[in-house]
Length: 372
Image (cartoon, rainbow, N blue to C red; front, top):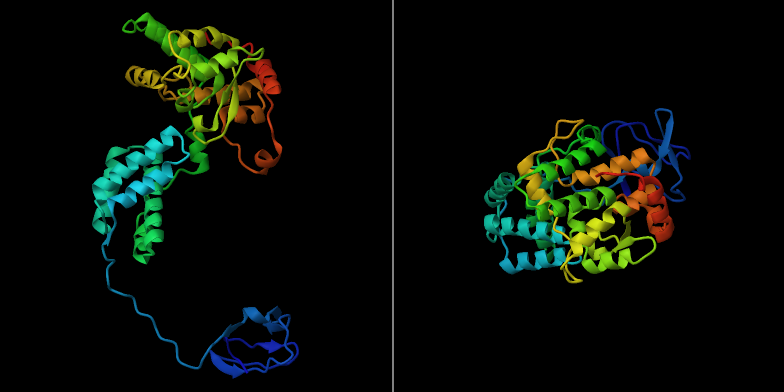
């Protein structure tokens, strides 16, 4: 016969197996012939048998647990552990993500220096906040550091490292979805034209540099590609695209930040600019480096028209997103071109985008858009 603890209420079985009242009292109930479906009545309502009884293995009194006053011990790890972690995390990642992991690894090596305790973790937190001002950058540092601690806890089977991982949390709360929506900058076609005009009127730039910057601006604005991804496009890819009746660049998975292969239609306005960018370069060379535009924008501080914000390189991608909505460009084709939001069973099992319909739909919406 098993013993059960029954809480302080009147529990009476529908088949009259037994009942008890008051406090926590040990009673013996003969469960012969009792099924799991047996239900007890509590204050007039029926609840399952399993939810009102708690199995007690023996009659010994329960031991009251007291809080331990012992602090967590320092945990050591080797430099090779960190190197192996960085190498494994960087596999099959985009160049920018691998660079992030490497930079965070350098912070970990400098501040933890092979020892994990409360003091070194605090020093690492201070170093992260001193180096990175933005919340998104700080968030990435916390994510990869916690992943490293989880990796060490798994390798060494040490619960102490898991405890330190729980201590190392980002205290900054991420913005709510509504706050993030309200903070999104509005980038209009006027902003892009003003940017091109600012490049043309900058007397400190030689004509060659002006042509290069304008070509970068136009390519990012007409295609919506991430700047870091666009900088990996080679001369050979552009040549192959321009040789087609419907020019379309094929982006490989390793060229995309999210590892998604996709296709990018080329607007007719881009053709002469791409031909200029390819001049004198071999087939494996990249057509441009977005950091040229990034550095120039950082110095000029060009303001947007409809919001209190200045132009940065990534806003050309926002322009493509927002202006595509105004033009009625399909979300499916737009997401595919930009390689974002491609999640869920529809994209993994059903949706497939073909090159010709993509180019046709793109030109029907964007064909008449002139930025120069």
